[in-house]
Each structure stands twice: as structure tokens, then as C-alpha cells.
Length: 346
Image (cartoon, rainbow, N blue to C red):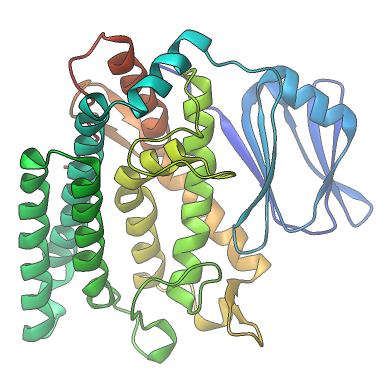
């Protein structure tokens, strides 16, 4: 089992990251804020405008530590990469499989079925934990949506093209987000959810979801590169310049488990308030710096929670799910597994 390493998240615009011996040092306001041995890191993510020394960037590239820069809302800006760690033979297989419908469809089927099933589990857990507190109409809507998501997951078995499966994925998202507002127990207009908006997010719920999805995206891309896969060439998401399509593919089945469930927990436990968000004049919404830090602390805690992987039968922290799924995809592409087993949350 791979050892789970740490990811450092830097949220201060005035931060400066540098190398001191075998350590990463974070400085801000003219003082050292913390230091971490490089051998304990797998990633560094900066939000806003933190800087990094050339010596640190070289050390991260040499050690295979992913160094990414995102804007305050979590939108990807840039990423430092060193020597390619990917297996060129595996990447050639991946590229050929992406162009071959006979090989691509089973992989996409596994991703879409797992995503719909995991979205259904989010709804089922909400009904189990808070269903008694919902009004009758809301509870019936959530029950209907979770039933339809189960049907969508089963319908993937008879879909014969990637386009048909993409249609099912869109249908699942529509069903899921149509009832997402009923899962939010925080009352008042500040935390109402009427649908997904992105680039930029236009309300507080979307700002939180987009931020968590960006952090998850970093982890998925790093996991794919660690297992020799090309994060740019996907199966469900079409190729597009500048888009890490395979990382987006891997995210789909993990979003409900890692991001959506955490967002609901933060809101329903009162760990975030309306004042933790900044409403910009143009209409976009983003988390404050203090709120970003609080969300990232909760994210790291969530990643340390353990579960038994349904396919591998091993107990692992949630933070390793992206690595385990990337490994299973690589094994399938090499021919070691007959199919790609999407992650099913139970």
C-alpha cells in the first residue's frame, strides 16, 4: 500500500516559499511561518499570488513533488513539472485506447456508473441522517432522485457509445443537483442552491464546491502522473488544449465521496457562515482567506478517514483513493485487469 504523504496549501498572497537544506520553508510578513521536510511531501498548492524560489522549484521537480498555483477561487493557473515520470509504453497504450471506442466505452461505463451510484449514496445518507427533518415534498423529491440515479447507474450497462454515456452522466448530474438544496440544513437565503455555476461561481454553495473540486483535481492529476498515466488524455472528457481530461474523468467518481459530502458537512455543522464568503461587484463569490484555511484543514482531516476499498478489499485512507483508482486504471490498460472497476462508495 502506498504511504500517504502530505500536501501543503498556502493561502496568503504575501507568502514566499523557499528551500532550506532538505526542507520547504514558508515565510510571510517577514517571519518564518512553518517548515516541512521535502521527503514528507507529495504536493504544494498555492492560492492567489504566493511566490517560490528557483531552488525550491528545482527541488520539487527533482523529487516529483507537484507544485501548483491556483487563483483564490481555486481555478487552475499553472503547474511545475520536472522530468516525466510516466511510462512511455503505458502512455502509448492509453492514447490508443482513448481513440478506440471498443476500449474506451467500458472505461467510461465504469466511471459514469460509479459517479451515479456515489451520488445516490450521498442522497441516501442525507435521507438516513436528516430525512425526518425534511418536509414531505422535499423528502419525496430526494427519494425520487436517488431512485432515478440508481436506474441511471444500471442503464450504463446497455450503452454502446461514449456519447450515450456522456448523456447519462449529464442526466445524473441534473437529477442530483436538482435536489442538492434539500440536503443543506442551514436556513436562510445566503445558503440557497439553485444549480451549478462555475467560472466564476455565482453563489456561496458553488464557491465552496468549486474550491473543493479544484483541490481534488490537483490530487487526481498528481495520482495519474505518479502511476505513469497522461492526465491530458481522457476517455469521458474530450481532449481540449490546456485541459487535464483524464484528471477530470477520475474526479467524477470521487467528487460525491470527497468533495460534496465534505461541503454538506461544513454547512450543516455550522462551520461556515455567510460572512466566510466575499461577494464581488461583478457577481462572483469566493471564500475569504480564513475560510479557505478552515476548509483545507477539514479537507486534510477528511482525507485521513479510512474505509475498505470495495474492489481491493484493503483498508485505506480516503486520501489514497485517487492513487488506488489510477493504479487500477493503469493495470487495466496494461491488460492485468479485464475491466476498470470504478470506485463504489458504500
